[in-house]
Image (cartoon, rainbow, N blue to C red):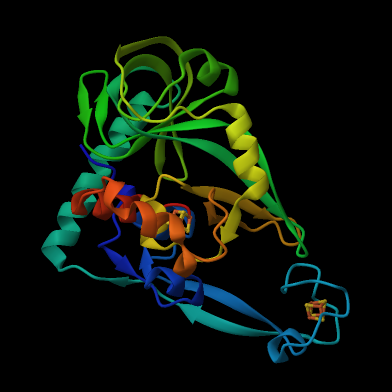
Length: 298
Ligand code: SF4
Ligand code: SF4
């Protein structure tokens, strides 16, 4: 079983917000988040005649937001967007069948305790972010275990899935890439991603050789890292890159950003990847799956 919500080969959308991702949108974004297929969505493009010309905002904002209507420099254009199906009718029908089976399976498991068995692909700190239009701040929320596949009960889930662990649990178990683990957790979906939480009955069946993240390292990364507007493929695949759920406090908008824990000013200037590219064991198949994984929050 895979997670059809994460498929990025079904739809394309030319809305500006997807340009940074090559017009790629996940099935989750289209079918569950925006519910914009087949009717499309109406979008009000906010404009600021000051910021558009590179002039500073009279209220000190860096971008247009919910507080702008009423300002004499503000205007809006109404636009219509519609996602396009990228596959032929037969493939789309198969996708719908796959989606129905997945949703039935999710319904059967949601809210239940499940057993999980799998090898940890990576461990990353979990950050959440907020922006007030002038600055961004991140807060630390424990760690995220990333699995490329695993067994949920007796079902082989052949796609990315995740487990959240508290800082206390990570301090006790020192989980790392390569560990084979077994545990029980609450089953749930978070923006199309399968996430297990409230872990107990943890057993490390085999120890891996990855680095162990500590809470103090996570705090250093939070303080010294950088947030990128784009989600470069190399950052998604990088062990020092983490996707961060952000909220814009000026308009309540939720979005995802790439956070570089190495503090690189720009992916194009990344010296970490240049120095260690050969050490990052991400095969082409991994990258394809990571690309699919990357779309659900948009
Ligand atoms: S408040 Fe909004 S519309 Fe007005 S100048 Fe600032 S950014 Fe532009
Ligand atoms: S270290 Fe380089 S590749 Fe990794 S997240 Fe930062 S900029 Fe991206």
